[in-house]
Length: 216
Image (cartoon, rainbow, N blue to C red; front, side, top):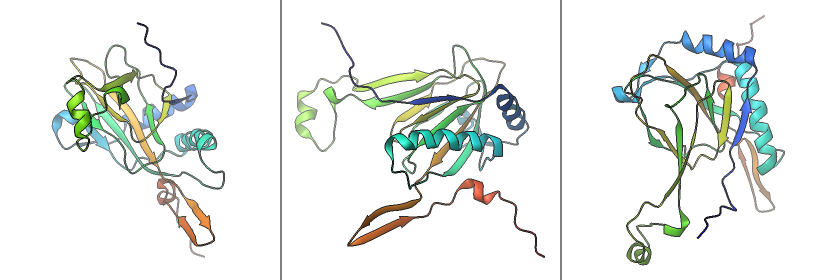
């Protein structure tokens, strides 16, 4: 028997310039971080904003938007944060339910550890609490399809927010793993028929950092 995979889930990879990579690393390395919920979860610097990096992010998001979403909509970055990990730290399994296009930017490169692992349910063995027949006929086997992305400095990966992802515990290392993650949400008229008109105005993180106009 041969296993074939004619269908896959597309991720989108972009790479920042060498100059931007260095500037962002120096900026991130100078930040103050706070502990996550538990010490083993590493550290976080919330509400992160870097204008040149966000210009790069926005252009990449627009490319993916053009594939799947209507042209009149926009997808501003509404949340962005920096993660810092070192020995004994890990990233717990989670997804991003309040997002449309998710981004993960690798500030540092790591060989042999620190991979981001993504998971999806295997439809051949879909386990649903509400479907007793499936629970009865399926063997008790792992129903997860998984794959991983290695950290490479300057790489930005855009992926669907529903996918679960995590990082295994980092063993002894003398280096620090930095990543920047962000969520986008839709902004614009999302439904415009005769009987209803729905418009969403998302507040971008960029707008929160714009300098206030000087009073004359």
